[in-house]
Length: 618
Image (cartoon, one colour):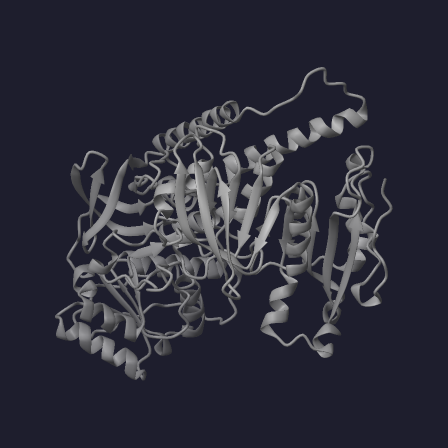
């Protein structure tokens, strides 16, 4: 059969789709079937993929019949190769059961979701004859995930708008397009980390023969000015890319007012209304505050740090997250007095052996840790840039109280999703009340069929820029390009600590018994980077570890490294692990000498052996 012609049918009349007569489709036949199914969906107002004996399918047909709606019904048990049709359909929808209902090209779902949509009024909105919208897609949020989705959809020929307005932090900080990563996250954080590394290099240089005739000091204002200049250039390049792809960028705050309709409010309070067939929520997260008096008035967060117009001085960092430790690390590297206050464990969710090694290396930099304490009172003693603050903290394990004086208090205790005040409740999008995150299915679709979400607002999604970028791009391809790819695989990393997989969560999810331990083999070593030797830096700070599955040919399922360029090292091994890297393949690899990554080709000592792994230093 070369093509499919399915006429518009009166209520209850079945539309048949002829399919190839073999259940095992070749790649070409599968792609042709997918193309014809998408054509059927695109060409009709309502399409129901059904089975004649299915009671749930019968309920859906009765619903549309009662609404007087013409349906195109394909009975999968009555076509020549319904199994192949259902298989390809499940790839398109990620739904393996029938009925599977499409209304005006939107996949509503199965029986339960269709009735839920009817009860909420969403179905009636979708059924509007020939709806005319201003845009095919409106993306709310101009961060990494939102921009990648918008640009990909535009490249596929769709009319796309991005709504993006940053609400200033309590300290009045705001920024341009491109979201957290570019403006107040990964990019400025790595640049400040580089500034700290240069300071350490200056210290090391004396051992390599460099003679400094004058005392070297760091100028905070010069650094932040240069970093913000670079961030500004990135903002402009993103705006230029949007213009080149004909994406309408509107610097306004988006809020749903009714189905398929959104209100955009600019910085002057002027309101404009837009409609779209589909929406993507990509609003990201913002830093959390302590919830005590004075926290928003006197404290700063990562939203403020990277453009802070003055040196923060003696700084208390509150939190145990990667953000907290990264900021504490580069501030100490710049020569500041830094204290980290931790309520429980460092880097929750990471391998705790690695987390404690990070803490030890930071203590060598002069960072002081206050463990098992939380701030309960803040008092401003002096105003200024910086001023002086008194912090009173209480033990999490008893009644002990301590206090300290600091110039700056930096909060890094977590982030909250930006899903409030954007009108999601007005159109029925379900939001986790506790976390503020949006539950979605495997294709990023929310509880409302035409609303999708990507990035940090998604429940269960790994909060990383590369994941959001890939998710946004693939979502656009599924919505408008007939593609099926979904996001797979993630990497967790900190500036000096980088990990693929995590040993500790394995211990938490399953009792760490001798039986479980016998299934894994852990190889590890401390190592001394060549560039640290002449400078006589500590020889037992850097650490490498892999975790292998004995049941799978010693396949490497865990990878951890603490040392210089940890992120760069891990990126390469991530690809190898996705290709099935084993311990034997590592052993057979000739190391690139002299590099830190080379250590992974010579790992011999197992944890179970108990042998000493310390290195001999200066």
